[in-house]
Every structure is written in C-alpha cells, then in structure tokens.
Amino acid sequence: MDNNYESIDNALNIKSEIVNVEKETPIIKVESSNNDIKKDYEYTRANLYSLIEKGQEAINGIMELAAESDQPRAYEVAGQLIKSVGDVTDKLIDLQKKLKDVEEDTVKTTNNVTNNAVFVGSTSELSKLLKQGFLNNKE
Image 1 (tube, rainbow, N blue to C red):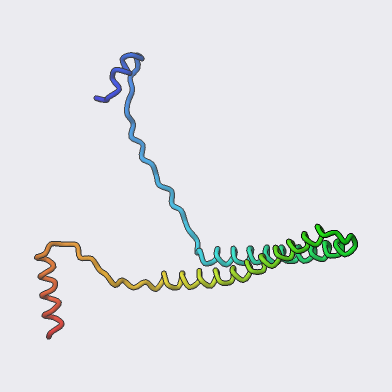
Image 2 (cartoon, rainbow, N blue to C red):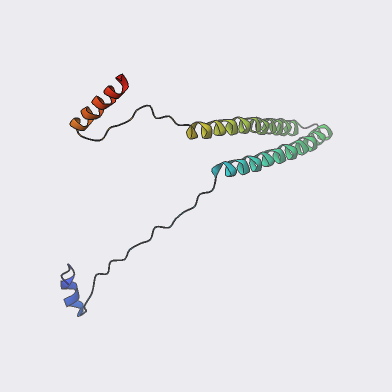
C-alpha cells in the first residue's frame, strides 16, 4: 500500500495501514414541538405566578417595616419591590402574546404555499413543456 507516511514508518521501523472507518450518523427523533411549547408555557406561567405571590408577600412585609420604622430607605425599597412585581405581571401578559404568536407561526408554516417555482433543465425542455402546457390549456 502506497501512503504518504512511508518516511515516518521507516524512521520508526513500523508498518502502518490506513484503515477507512465509516461513521454512522445517529438518528435523532424529534417529538412534536407543539407539546414542548405547551409545557414550557405552563412552566413559565407557574413560575411567574409564584414570583408575583412572593413579591406580594415581600411588599406586605416591607410596608409593615416601613410603617414601624418611618425610615425613607424602607419606603424606597418598598417602591422598588412594587415596581418589580409590576414588571413580572407585565411579563405574564407578554407570555400570553408570545404564545399566541408562536401558535400563529406554527399554523403559517404548516400551510405554506409555493408561489415561485424553479425549473431545472435545458431551454429546449422548457420550451417543449410550455408548448404542451399551452396546447393542453387552449383545447
């Protein structure tokens, strides 16, 4: 067998062979992504509800502390917590919009219409097809 590594083989006093190994490509099974989207939506929604509830508890606690201590910093923290909980509730609404968009996209992708078709062939084949098509349509 003639190979490019003869000088290395001679220097190391070994005999090598090139072996071709065929790699098998693994088959990956992808389940319905619609089910995954629904699971992710439910998980995210549950987390957002949990964050909102914990935020409400924290707001109640900091408001009591602020009322007892009369410190401006406590009221500032309460304001930041209220803003954070409000942001999370906005994310909950955004989640609804995103789910609706994803569902619309999946419907659009399943109903694709091809408007532009490409002919692969010679001009003589194309002209024959066009002549046959025009003759069949006129009759």
